[in-house]
Image (tube, rainbow, N blue to C red; front, top):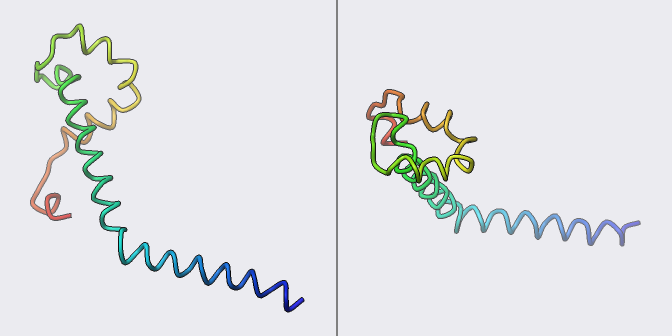
Length: 92
């Protein structure tokens, strides 16, 4: 039984070591990439569906063609775009 526990313990130790190295080396880069992706998605929706907020950027024809792909995100996007912001939003 002691022989069976050893590979499991070694695997857990290796997994823990990988998590620690990931946290020290690339966690901040991964979070930054996710924030960049989210801001690019917000910008894309603003450009295509800006007329919902009164910002006419593209002709409605193109907005209507993209509508099926953007529909699931519209309600949360409008909520994010129309909420009040203060200095603490920029810092976080």
